[in-house]
Image (cartoon, rainbow, N blue to C red):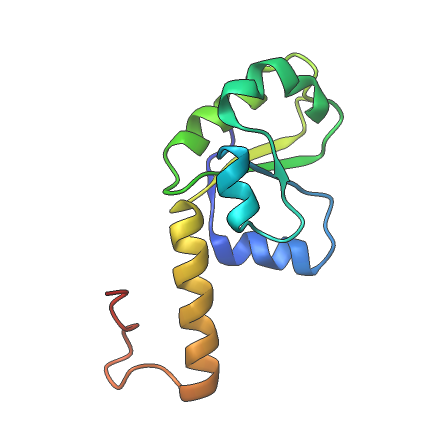
Length: 124
Protein backbone atom coordinates (compact mmCIF):
# COMPACT_ATOMS: atom_id res chain seq x y z
CA UNK A 1 0.00 0.00 0.00
CA UNK A 2 1.19 3.47 -0.84
CA UNK A 3 -0.40 5.30 2.10
CA UNK A 4 -3.40 7.55 2.32
CA UNK A 5 -4.89 10.16 0.05
CA UNK A 6 -7.11 13.05 1.11
CA UNK A 7 -10.74 13.33 0.00
CA UNK A 8 -9.88 16.59 -1.78
CA UNK A 9 -7.18 14.82 -3.78
CA UNK A 10 -9.58 11.99 -4.67
CA UNK A 11 -12.13 14.55 -5.87
CA UNK A 12 -9.46 16.28 -7.95
CA UNK A 13 -8.49 12.96 -9.58
CA UNK A 14 -12.12 12.23 -10.41
CA UNK A 15 -12.74 15.77 -11.68
CA UNK A 16 -9.68 15.44 -13.94
CA UNK A 17 -10.86 12.05 -15.26
CA UNK A 18 -7.63 10.48 -14.03
CA UNK A 19 -7.10 6.75 -14.39
CA UNK A 20 -8.22 5.93 -10.85
CA UNK A 21 -10.47 3.18 -9.53
CA UNK A 22 -12.29 4.25 -6.37
CA UNK A 23 -13.41 1.11 -4.53
CA UNK A 24 -16.12 1.47 -1.89
CA UNK A 25 -15.86 -1.56 0.40
CA UNK A 26 -19.14 -1.04 2.28
CA UNK A 27 -22.08 -3.46 1.96
CA UNK A 28 -24.26 -3.06 -1.13
CA UNK A 29 -27.12 -1.49 0.85
CA UNK A 30 -24.90 1.25 2.28
CA UNK A 31 -23.41 1.90 -1.16
CA UNK A 32 -26.91 2.17 -2.66
CA UNK A 33 -27.82 4.84 -0.10
CA UNK A 34 -24.99 7.07 -1.28
CA UNK A 35 -21.46 6.87 -2.60
CA UNK A 36 -18.71 8.82 -4.32
CA UNK A 37 -19.73 9.40 -7.94
CA UNK A 38 -17.72 7.12 -10.20
CA UNK A 39 -16.83 4.68 -7.44
CA UNK A 40 -17.45 0.96 -7.66
CA UNK A 41 -18.78 -1.27 -4.91
CA UNK A 42 -16.83 -4.33 -3.84
CA UNK A 43 -17.92 -5.19 -0.29
CA UNK A 44 -14.98 -6.09 1.92
CA UNK A 45 -16.02 -9.76 2.41
CA UNK A 46 -15.93 -10.24 -1.40
CA UNK A 47 -12.65 -8.43 -1.94
CA UNK A 48 -10.39 -11.47 -1.75
CA UNK A 49 -12.57 -13.25 -4.31
CA UNK A 50 -12.79 -10.22 -6.64
CA UNK A 51 -9.29 -8.75 -6.25
CA UNK A 52 -8.34 -9.83 -9.78
CA UNK A 53 -10.69 -7.09 -11.05
CA UNK A 54 -7.91 -4.61 -10.25
CA UNK A 55 -5.16 -6.30 -12.25
CA UNK A 56 -3.69 -3.73 -14.60
CA UNK A 57 -5.10 -0.75 -12.70
CA UNK A 58 -2.80 2.26 -12.55
CA UNK A 59 -4.26 3.66 -9.35
CA UNK A 60 -6.72 2.26 -6.81
CA UNK A 61 -8.23 4.17 -3.88
CA UNK A 62 -10.17 2.22 -1.27
CA UNK A 63 -13.01 3.87 0.68
CA UNK A 64 -14.94 2.94 3.83
CA UNK A 65 -16.98 4.88 6.39
CA UNK A 66 -14.11 6.18 8.55
CA UNK A 67 -10.88 5.28 6.73
CA UNK A 68 -9.87 2.30 8.84
CA UNK A 69 -11.13 -0.80 7.01
CA UNK A 70 -10.06 0.75 3.73
CA UNK A 71 -6.43 0.57 4.90
CA UNK A 72 -6.80 -3.22 5.19
CA UNK A 73 -8.49 -3.33 1.80
CA UNK A 74 -5.70 -1.29 0.19
CA UNK A 75 -3.11 -3.62 1.73
CA UNK A 76 -4.95 -6.64 0.35
CA UNK A 77 -5.19 -5.17 -3.16
CA UNK A 78 -1.55 -4.03 -3.12
CA UNK A 79 -0.41 -7.54 -2.13
CA UNK A 80 -2.24 -9.19 -5.04
CA UNK A 81 0.24 -10.58 -7.54
CA UNK A 82 -1.77 -9.18 -10.48
CA UNK A 83 -1.19 -5.59 -9.33
CA UNK A 84 1.67 -3.96 -11.21
CA UNK A 85 4.52 -2.88 -8.94
CA UNK A 86 4.23 0.63 -10.41
CA UNK A 87 0.54 0.87 -9.52
CA UNK A 88 -0.52 3.20 -6.71
CA UNK A 89 -2.87 1.72 -4.09
CA UNK A 90 -4.12 4.07 -1.38
CA UNK A 91 -6.77 4.38 1.29
CA UNK A 92 -8.85 7.56 1.50
CA UNK A 93 -8.02 9.25 4.81
CA UNK A 94 -11.04 9.76 7.05
CA UNK A 95 -13.32 7.72 4.82
CA UNK A 96 -16.71 8.84 3.62
CA UNK A 97 -17.21 10.87 6.78
CA UNK A 98 -14.26 13.07 5.76
CA UNK A 99 -15.47 13.13 2.15
CA UNK A 100 -18.92 14.41 3.07
CA UNK A 101 -17.77 16.82 5.78
CA UNK A 102 -14.85 18.15 3.76
CA UNK A 103 -16.89 18.77 0.62
CA UNK A 104 -19.71 20.42 2.55
CA UNK A 105 -17.23 22.68 4.34
CA UNK A 106 -15.51 23.59 1.06
CA UNK A 107 -18.84 24.40 -0.60
CA UNK A 108 -19.98 26.50 2.36
CA UNK A 109 -16.68 28.40 2.46
CA UNK A 110 -16.94 29.05 -1.27
CA UNK A 111 -20.34 30.63 -0.65
CA UNK A 112 -19.73 32.33 2.71
CA UNK A 113 -15.96 32.48 3.15
CA UNK A 114 -14.00 30.81 5.96
CA UNK A 115 -14.87 31.23 9.61
CA UNK A 116 -13.55 34.53 11.08
CA UNK A 117 -10.72 32.74 12.88
CA UNK A 118 -9.91 30.65 9.78
CA UNK A 119 -11.07 27.33 11.23
CA UNK A 120 -13.92 25.32 9.74
CA UNK A 121 -17.19 25.04 11.63
CA UNK A 122 -17.56 21.99 13.89
CA UNK A 123 -19.45 19.15 12.18
CA UNK A 124 -21.94 18.91 15.08
